[in-house]
Length: 354
Image (tube, rainbow, N blue to C red; front, side, top):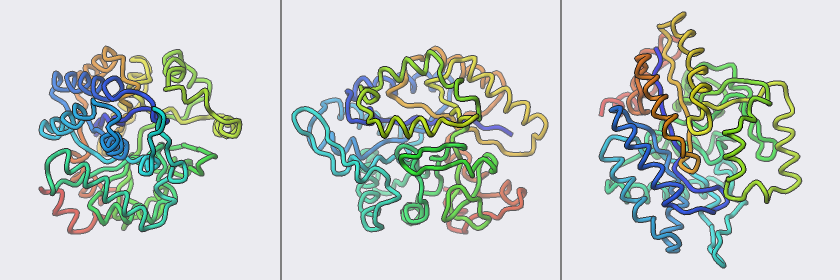
């Protein structure tokens, strides 16, 4: 059985450029209107560290619109999930530009007390925005997908009540940041884990539901739609160092490359062809649960016609559109046992019932 999850990273450009109204508020507003039309909901991975800094420094008046939008999404049943780019936590605003702390780029490499401090601050801010002191996001996505080395950050996030990660894209490789998700290629559509997000463990307290990828020849990544978006990415591409460019070349120096199921960057034909392959697989084995996670970014979202048509396609194929709370009982319950795995702790089982 397939259930489809639209996830969108709710953020400005990674180098701190861009206006909230253009890159976050308006795109998310348009997307929400489409989803309400189809009586569906998406997962908003909210990058709260940047919003907290923008509000504190008063650099963008649209922060009030963004905060109201997040609260409204929460009331309307869209999932508010945690997304963290920790380089924002020590950010400074000088001479009209943000200076981010690259030394804190990867949450997972920071000391335990620093990770705890960042997570606590982010949760407090998101609770303030949704006006609920009891709210805890169920799911998490690491900034730039960096959830390695996994163990310390995962244990802290679990202590805070977060249960699902969706940072992995199978086959992913970033030499510069020591990210390697190639071992995850052997795993299925989701898996429990504990100390290593690549490694399925029967007794793992976390569940990984990765961003869906197909391994394709690298040249298939160079579509006009993708290249057009890259050229407008806040000027970041032009400022890459030679070392960064060489590492990106090394990342791609292989026969097959992970193509993410990205509903902002792919054409309707690309999206439907990828889904048709998953549908055929499901028809051959309908008993296996297949949560399919698509990714998008508000800063990339300008082709609403494609999203609308793809939503129509999924509805025609009778594929449910879900959020992580919708599928969590299935992830941690019967289907895991049927797969030869075990359910999570009793506290997690109780959580899924509320």
